[in-house]
Amino acid sequence: MTDFSDYVTDMVHEPTQTEGAGVDLTVADVREIVAPGRIDFGGGELEPAATVPHRREKRDPEDDYEWWSLGAGQYLLEFNESLTDAATVTVQPRTELLERGATHPTLHVEELPRVPLSVGGAGLKLKENARVSTVVAADQ
Image (cartoon, rainbow, N blue to C red; front, side):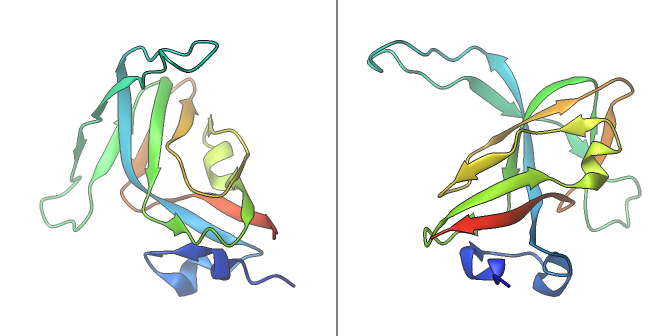
């Protein structure tokens, strides 16, 4: 059995994040896309989309962590964790995310990019450091 924690650094709480068959990744930031990026054939006019942090707030003043209230739409997730560059890994959305009407694409990556998050219907309440994705496979 592969120890996927060999490929992930900067974990928020390793014992919790490694309970299952992979390593869970946690959300550090949610960004809104406010202006389009550009992609061309040769890459000479490649420009990133303009983003701003999505507003978050504490549910109670005594809370340690804040929450994002996300309406239906598209966002970009940033993870707390990084990858070690030791392998290409597969990152997929957690069941808990899917069952609440949100998803992101399954990725095969050597480093963690911002990940597009699609939120449906009634929206989603997302807590800072929530486990939203899992590293499930590695190709060395």
